[in-house]
Length: 208
View 1 (cartoon, one colour):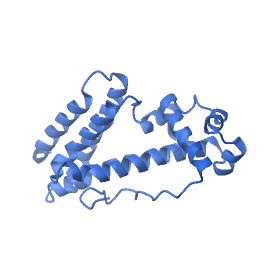
View 2 (cartoon, one colour):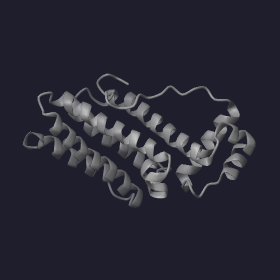
View 3 (tube, helix red, strand yellow):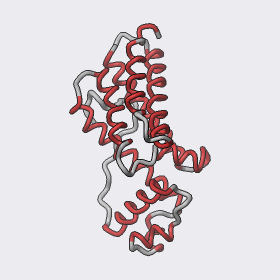
View 4 (cartoon, one colour):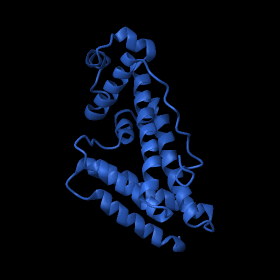
């Protein structure tokens, strides 16, 4: 990630190993179906059938469906981190505007036909904290907070760390809330509203 954007405390974005075509089809199929229809609604039999791969081959790479779910969420996290890394520097050089630009990226996503909400929130709703995917969700959320923390620190290096951490939590709430709201009621400009609220948080940071 660009040094101006990359959160230093976040997990590194892993390089994805080259997969064999059959395995790649299976992963793409699982990722699509899990996101579109929900994880528990999609069985391994269907994933194998739509990917034109045998269940035996699928299980040779993923010992259980839980392993496939973890892979799905890790892929989602890696792709989003890479997108933010590449896109934010194109929007602006100003750290405050980069924070707000994150909400512009969300807004672009919300209006795509395939938007079904945040995959991590959806997975938590289906499984809760006992599932192995919970660890991936926590890692992704840590990356989001670290992204905002680093940009806030760049914006005001003299600000106390406790204040920066709290502001990042506030902005993170807007980030999460806009995704959930856009899924429940896609007719309203949730990303724009969250962006305006984030701008208000930034303007009041000296009083925090």
